[in-house]
Length: 356
Image (cartoon, rainbow, N blue to C red; front, top):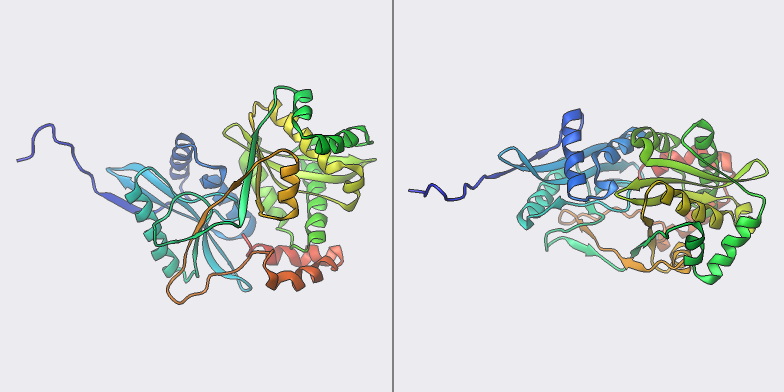
């Protein structure tokens, strides 16, 4: 006979989240907030991606006696060009399982394997968090960059290393205007700059409706900062705000931004703006190790933090390859750089929706 004070053991159950149910979404949002999950683990992120790219928002929850114990956000990213994968989280730079028990991590990951098989996905990709030992770790490719914000604008400027600070000062002296908002003009300016910027890098641009969806659904926790020269936008960034940190997530500059130091001005102004919004951290996101953006962030005094992702593939199946720095894409990137902007902007969203 079990004693009166013996602990009661509740069996765990795993199911697919009902992300069409507002109460379920709110419940998972509270769970993510309580466990200090990343912005890319929020159901809201998955739903914005679904609205903006038509890739299904999925997710798995583990419960005991009706109590939410763990959550694995997933996006079913698919395209005729790159195949299908379950990604945590799609179009983000973080994600993975949010759970305290190791057994729950394994349970959610194995459930993701089954879901991938049902959906004929070639892989499950976790961009953060733990994974079962049999999953393949992906290391040595990307690093993250975060740093504390300074106490005021002048201290923030002085916190930037000397060489980079000199470039910021040039940007502050140039004839540049800064605007911040979420309105139609902000969105149009951002997309025009961003689309041209990624074309110049040889990368297809995401659909404009993706940026609209994030801004519409995130409300005051997302905005656009644009730097203009004599009325023409030359640099712009869409940023996310989460747990006291700002992340400049989708940003870029036209060719003119380089001589005007508009990108340097943009990031400095964003640091000051974020502090005024009560942020204490600046999350510069991830960069490919050894890339230009990696060096740029180091020059700003950010220390790289190596990132570990995890991947599972069914036996005998090759995972998709969407790494633009892979040598196999070099010829395609060179070709894309030469495309007229209107053509790149027409073709890009159809391709990019499968790259998340």
